[in-house]
Image 1 (cartoon, rainbow, N blue to C red):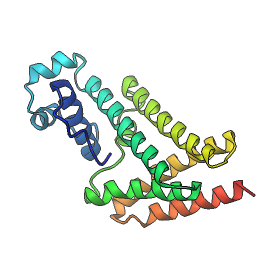
Image 2 (cartoon, rainbow, N blue to C red; image 1 turned 30 degrees about the vertical axis):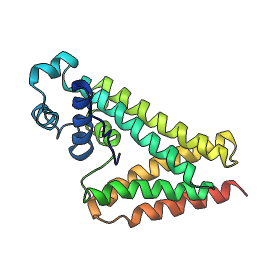
Image 3 (spheres, one colour; image 1 turned 120 degrees about the horizontal axis):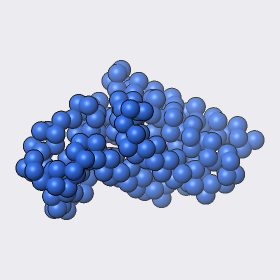
Length: 196
């Protein structure tokens, strides 16, 4: 989630982008409505006009935006790589990029929100589950294009998502991205074993 739309957004989109940016760095519970309003330069009444359900409804929209942005990054990474091994390394680079640019402040908004709110907030739980499913499906499709059978591609995609999400959490606490590269190495070993 390195870049958000640079075009001048409408008020609703501005609120969504502000919420997405803040949740990305502070998590769902660490992001207050006052923070979102300040970042988006929107009055409180406008927020409830666009999102009558308040913060949870806005967060669902922000997570959908996050999902789309990272999915586009995965697709762009796939275009730049010629092998499944190269794509795994590209996923590692994407995971490291946000950490390094944010000085280890940015985590995965879906993971953070899921850990903070599931299963007590069903709408947010669904948004996180759906977002992960988009990413896993995209990664599985990319592995299939590199010759992995459908079932193995799906399994490796799930292992990749789980591995990088876990590595991201550990890397943030250590302020060291080496575990992300270690995770990529392990996934490449799994890939190699599946091809034998």
